[in-house]
Picture 1 (cartoon, rainbow, N blue to C red):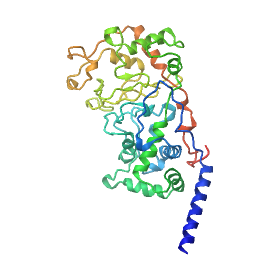
Picture 2 (cartoon, helix red, strand yellow):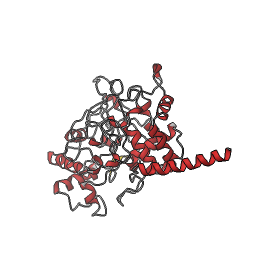
Picture 3 (tube, rainbow, N blue to C red):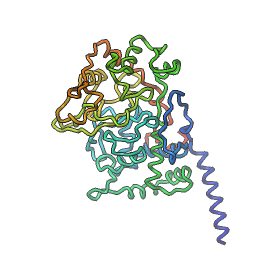
Picture 4 (cartoon, one colour):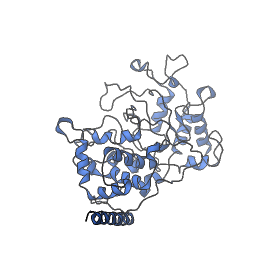
Amino acid sequence: MKNILIVLVLISTIFFFCATSQQINFYNYANQEIPNYINRDNTPANNQMNDTIANLGRVLFYDKNLSINNTISCASCHKQAFAFGDQSVLSQGVSKELTGRHVMRLVNIRFAQAVTLFWDERAATLEDQTTEPIKDHIEMGFSGINGAPTFEDLINKLECIDYYRTLFSVAFGDYQITESRIQLALAQFIRSIQSFDSKYDVGRAQVTNDEMPFPNFTEQENEGKRLFMMPKDKNGANCQPCHRAPIFDIDPGTSNNGIIGVAGDPKAVDLMNTRSPSLRDLVNPNGTLNGPLMHDGSLTSLAAVIDHYNQIPLDPRNSTRLNSRLRTSDLKSGQNLQLTQAEKDALIAFLKTLTGAAIYTDARWSSPFDRNGELIFNK
């Protein structure tokens, strides 16, 4: 009798996997086209990209069941329409309270050299980062603070949802739900979000290095690129050392950039912000910002960003933490590039060439839920 039961279980399991595989549309996450000049990949050995796991991550990313009152998902703050950023200075959590810092855009995280996350780099890896907002009492609420549900309560909640029994079984071979598996899946989906179809990428593919003029650029855009790449002593704007092409990610170990405010509190100071998202997709294809810039959302135009770096005040409260690259040679003052208006305009024109198109519309990164909150496997 025992052997018969084992056989029946095996048969039902095989049928389950076959039926599930036919129902779910597994998008290509693992083998996306990547330009040959992108030679960096921070994917850890224990979480290599897999279509079924990334597909599970997509569902988790968009599922409001991951908040205590079913009102907030990861995508509530990281919106595809804004390169997975937010146009609000601060985002609302489950009880309408606001986050402490502006949301980072999720662009090309897989290709950054720095693997730490959050503005203050408190998460050692993307995997670590993914469940922190879920456990934050303001954001998604499973904090266990003052009687709030715990992360274990979330796991119990997800175990009662049929599609997670299916998705975890397909992704991991059984339907056990753990924080580690949730982290692996969310991290894979976030790493899959890439943007390499910009005007910059079209030009970069036609030359052998970033210093060469791009044949598809205007004269102004090429001048902006030159200014971006060149150091101060070569009449440049000195952007490249911190935001390095072709990823335009932040250089690891960079100190803060002189923006030390706290959103909503003009008297407060925050010196701990040393991380930054990629400079890709600062604006969307229609030219508007994908949200205010910096951790406090204090800069609301590319012109304001250029003005800040053109002349950086050295606040006495930040005298030991301002990035040395943003100081004068004697380290006693903030840098003063003395850019002309034409040079500022050229830099802005170049930054706009870093905007792609697919990141805003590609179904791989869009919601798998319909307007009624029903999961559509074949979307």
